[in-house]
Image (tube, rainbow, N blue to C red; front, top):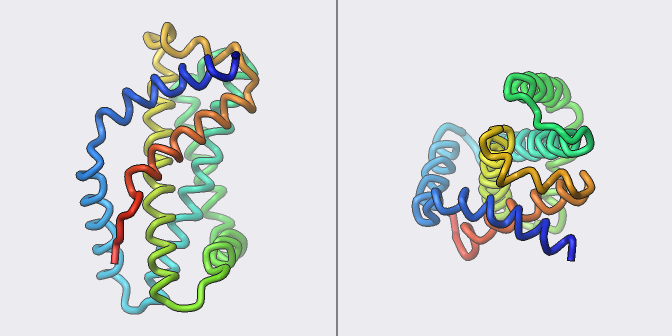
Length: 188
């Protein structure tokens, strides 16, 4: 019962977020972003490295956002926007510092697993990039809503649940909505 109430609370917030984004517009925008990235690269290898680097950066940033949300839930207080920005900026500096030596090889291996040709690798990387970027974008908007104290009537119920559960439900809801946008889309 408690989980249903949490999921309903988070879903209602994401309903507001998703209502402002148009599925077709996001698909077109993502196709344009990927085309621009592809055109800036001189080879398939460079394009894949760019996508994988962007995926790693976005996924790691998403993890930080969720961690900040969870810490806020543990402390039972809203994170101040200026602190949030500082935490994100510091985390992104740390991500950039380990990108080439640690994250890029790790993500390249994960994304390449089971892939036998460049076309399949491109399709998989483009889909992962698209969904992780929109997931991250949705989480950023969620956090803006969550940090805004005038929204407390809408978000204060989140403090009644474990930080792990809130983080999991928020992340899963963002991922779900991002996946729905790109379901069946081909970027190639």
